[in-house]
Image 1: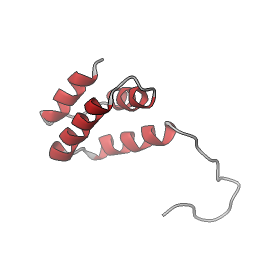
Image 2: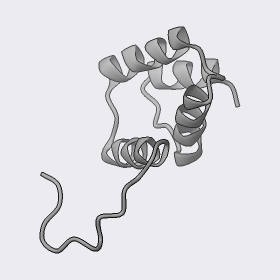
Image 3: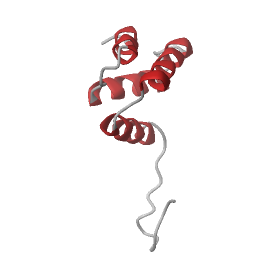
Amino acid sequence: MRMYDLIMKKKHGEVLTEQEIQFMIDGYVKGEIPDYQMSAMLMAIWFKGMNDLEITELTKTMAKSGDMIDLSAISGKKGG
């Protein structure tokens, strides 16, 4: 899988798969995908948008890319 291909896919309005989104975020966090390629992807997303499944997968993958705090021991509503 190559970031260039994913950028072109989104540029043409196609839907990114769960695996493609994970590849993109994981590669960027590890420093394997340069800033200029991520910028190009973000521009393609800005112009073509993402469907609900893409947005959900992007959000989940981004959340898992860093430290997560377990708040299950705290009662009540958490978050906005």
